[in-house]
Length: 600
Image 1: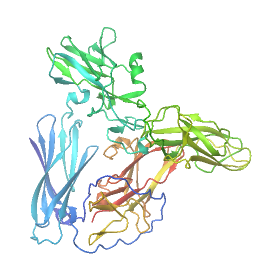
Image 2: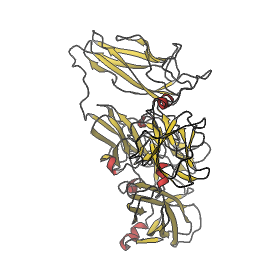
Image 3: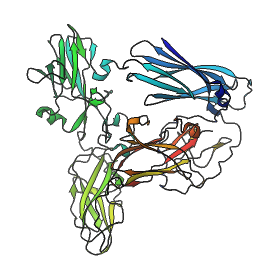
Image 4: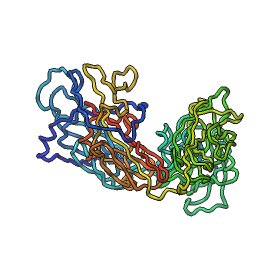
């Protein structure tokens, strides 16, 4: 075992004895309130004085030194021993919060002190062991920061067992090579990351433009029968098709190669093969993974008399096999956003334009290609027929629909109303309501310049960062509080920028290229820009092209920790300080807001 010991400089001791007054509480995630306005009036207001002393006091522990312990096993395990002082005998260690960004682990050790206790007013030493998740990390030097005390450790080699990336493992059973081809489930496959938080089993794709399945074989995920898997002699980088063996998956998705000699082989699933393509259709492989990207082949080495199992392939159908229409299912959709023509866009007479919308199937009926976009009233603008959907859409998925319209010849304001129609031609509106439609509204003016494609770099993202007030007075929740769970007695801010709340200035925001990573910490290589919220809490990233972006606020970063901790996010979702979105060319998204609830 290797030990790295780091002590805090003496000059920092007194300052660190000043405890912060709260903790980054990891609250149960639940739906936020109504979305706050894009550019709210945010004149500062005085923070209320919280009466009474019957609430627990939370803070950060004073850490004087850390030891980093490296267990010389493989994979390597790393833990941190933090040593410090609690201010009195009534204060206890509460939570350990760990985040990793690039090559840095940041750890917050928080404290809890119950009210109305008789305590010994003397420093109480403590030791706290903290495990770091280093599985899968590449070789390199990593920094560790625990409540301001910094240390480091070095991994001499990649901390990744070979079998973790290929999925191949030695197992019992008859000699040979076996595995499964399974349906890696994600109900949001094809959905843009910014349109919805990933459900369980879904992650952003490597390109960051859509959600897809996570590459992990979970209980209940079915096998895919009838798929042909091939076995080629040699390493996958040099093996050539020709003299190979083939195995077909059974009803459970299992395949097996038997009676083969000890050697190196390439196990290969050709998704472009005509027979396989007929079964798999459109979709992507999610497992195995090589260099962060899913691949269709695995190199394995078979020893004499050995059995290699779990040589698996995960496949995520781009369009889930559309289930049979359930009797008495519900047709309904949610309007997500306009894609091409904002309301009251000005066109010259007779100009043709494309109107597009993003919709989410929030009903229980799958939409087949017999479903269509249907004109239901208003100004026809050149089309009154239905436009069939281009692909099937299962419940939970989003679909982009568009139609080509022509501006009328007479100046004026025009609006065209649309809904969806099922296979029988029955129309239905937003949330299933027959009276609710989506529309495009334009203004026709003589002499108006033709509406061209927005120029590159003309899009922007912005919003406001505000303090989402919630406090207790003698156990009674203030205005603007919501219970984290019904009957729990725990409260947070409601996720709405109310008129008694104030802006947060000087908060550092990071703009990243691609979908937000699961932990919310944008890797350095993907960072495009940083900015600070102004005195009015507003921020903006300008000069952007169309694409997928992530706006993130890291509450534990050195720039933000003293401004935000202790507390937690209430908007865009409880505990979530990041927002992913797809930006169209020239689009102005100035409603990407962040609400923070200080936990006093």
